[in-house]
Image (tube, rainbow, N blue to C red; front, side, top):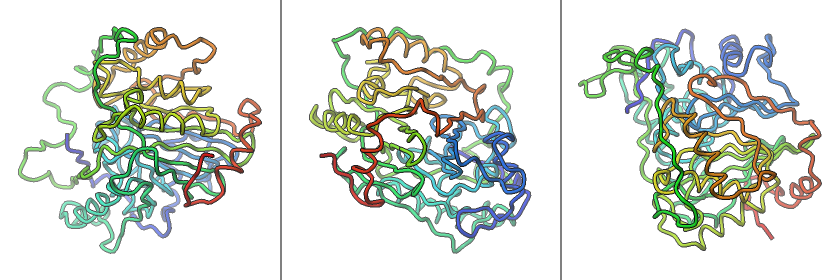
Length: 427
């Protein structure tokens, strides 16, 4: 579905110098909406320096505040209404939040839509694959040539705006062979990223039966969104309605080339988390666009095991392999990472997991853990997300809490996190 939004919702002039919003009150309001009034300084818009906060925007998209530094993990919004609705956020909120950076797990539209527009408005730096960086440049140029955007006095982009995009991996690279330390959150946190595998269907794994889960959609949808009431304009119409604009991404080439991100704070108890919006077939070493071998999967598993101990795993619950192998691939990522806590993503769009099917997937996840005989003591604490109940509900972690302490962390920071912008070597 084409992502088309109402430009007329902008009510104040959008002008950025650095990735910091010039309209302070608009930024404060947006941050209070996304991260909670209790976490925002009402005069400055600042966030706590001793906490990490996440706010689920939908699908695999989160706004994150890491010791006061705001980033987006993906930028797509499921059913982004022209006014606040099921997904209680509009594009103005995403711009007003004034993110410093945007991290894209991969370039498909259900992850990267809106990214070029937000970056063009805010100056936020994008971190993506080389292929997706190229597409982001094309997306911004298209939008700068779109009359529906440029003729709107408030929503228009600056004609001189450019995309600042860091290529985490080179074009056509082999998964797991290029590992980069990003400067995105320095000096607060070390961020390590590498290409892994996008989900793909592989033959059923005979080592355990498939997950017996029936996806049940939310029966409220018929009442919440009656048939015939469009949430977006008819994409087959010859032109968008007055005041509306198209913020989708072209998504090609390289849309399926996926990145895995690992974060560890340099201060406090060294809170750590990982985020990825797809999960490939590690056992077979295959992913969308990568017809690999088990060796490719083993290479990625070795990296996952070598990363700093993982406190929080934010990983996809949707997979192109769901029909054949359930949530096997996700759990094999967890077997390597051994996280303390699991928060799912990719719950509102994608293969098998659509809007309001969250609890069905949760049941499947728990059953899959049993089928794969994961010991109870190794299973993460689950903080499941439900659409639309959990949108924009702050998830807060105290970075000084002793629960995150692990003697391995400080040593790994010194060993792995030596050169922001440079390659990481596990030896």
